[in-house]
Amino acid sequence: MNFSKNLINWYSVNKRSLPWRETSDPYFIWLSEIILQQTQVKQGWPYYKAFITKFPTVFDLAAAKEDAVLNLWQGLGYYSRARNLHFSAKYIVEELHGVFPSTYNDIKKLKGVGDYTASAIASICYNEKTAVVDGNVYRVLARVFGIDTPINSTNGIKAFKLLAQELLDKKQPATFNQAIMDYGSQVCKPKQPLCTNCIFNKTCSAFNTNKVGDLPVKLKKTKITTKYFNFLVIINDDNIALEKRIGKGIWQNLYQFPLYDSLAEVDVLEVSSYLKNELKLEDFELSLYNNLPIVHKLSHQHLQTKFWIVNTTNKIENSIKIHELNNFPVPVLIENFIKAFNF
Image (cartoon, rainbow, N blue to C red):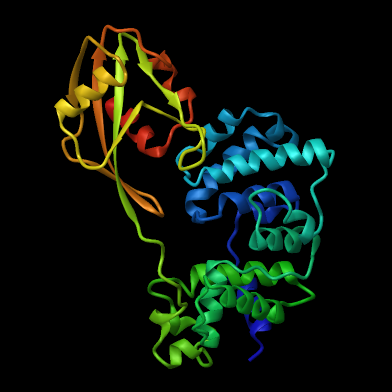
């Protein structure tokens, strides 16, 4: 089986038309790869277009305020990607004089860039012979070659990278890399793969041993924890409380309503006590916006969320004008509330 030749032939007919495939500019390729980390093409496409419109060069991105970058990223999740993108843009401008690094090793030095992203940029922009290994690639290789080594184990990461490197078409590294990613996305899909139409089905180990659903193997994820978030929407006339999340953790540097996190669901009396004793509010009316918690699922935790409306005549700390709410980057959970509440 000439794996690479067959794959590239398939790609020549079935290649998807994507905006970042119309350029070899490393800045645009880098933007697209960071956006598409843990994000499907359909969701990431409009964000890519928004970024290249607002920040057409790395100099524009480097000069931007972090809040502006996070605001444009809003709704995409995994906000550390946006912070790392902004940090690396400033590094490229300030330390590299605006010249994007041109080798795998140098690209990998950028904050937020790992083996996959560095390999993609190096091969697509500079024709470097380095293979990409992402979720799509793991899936194709595990099934076709019958590999049951866990893809998130140290041995698995090394083995799959080595195999991908051996299969890589050294004359067309960029084409091969994009072909195998497209194949995993369009044919060798996680669920309901198109095995009967697969160009490898005659030799595919998983297909011929009925193990397609068993591969690739992944070690069990970290246990998911449940947290209870109570957002306090504190309003005084046309002012509303809004605070910036600081420190490490989810939603770093994004904005939120004051948060009371609890060990379990709380009632009106407990929230009232918190407002009086912790936030020092004296005159307020309290009501619950959603009786049933809104469940917001993150990779490592599920948030049981309630929004409490607090109308007060007291002076509010960290307040902004209500009409300014859309100027601040907030988690999608809060963004959805703002739209639904319709201030």
